[in-house]
Length: 250
Ligand code: OAD
Image (tube, protein in one colour):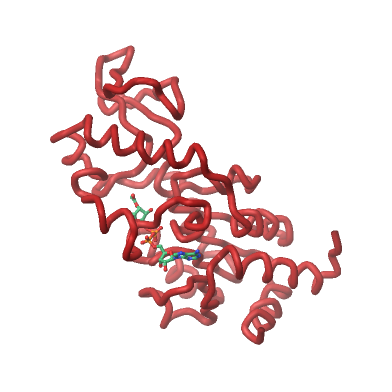
């Protein structure tokens, strides 16, 4: 398709490529997105389940919801989109992968140095003293666990609404966005800030913007190329064509 060839032509000239991903990348792996018509925020309240206020008003409800999501994630595997992004990472002198996803499926697909803007759902820590809680996923406890050191409530190590993003991850993401030649926004509605500001940082600094999304988003009218396709279809095709264009044959 014409648009793939145009993007490949730009990629062949690029030294530094940045990819920002959102929930759409994991949709094919059976992980729900948030804002699609059947997404999590159509069924659940973000303020009840993903905010400090929601946690304080009913910690057990919040804990149960994350356990429910972990049980789904336990059965999930990376899809062809995750693998194509990992492959893409090897094709450029500089490459940064920034994700809003908490599922660690990029790492499972062997992407390295993933910049996690919203934390992860695998780990937990104490709400009060912040100490990491030693047990990972699939905690047997039905009741919300307590911190062995201070007795505080244990919470998942995700970023909730109203919380600061991890400063180190945000700085790395902003720095990468400001310095790249091509910026991909893949499978995100581009509605949640500060992640949603990153494509604009890239554009202001002269990068080409490419969006991969089967739907239109707030960013679409601003990008140079919109690949109107799912990530699991578009990315393997893009990466295999790019490899051929670079003379790489497996
Ligand atoms: P959203 O649910 O807001 O957006 C998902 C996007 O993925 C939509 O634009 C869909 O069109 C697109 N999409 C769906 N299926 C796709 C597929 N197979 N391939 C490619 N794209 C597809 O999810 P995010 O943008 O990730 O934050 O949401 C950002 C943040 O809002 C999340 O990290 C989470 C949420 O509240 C926190 O929990 C802090």
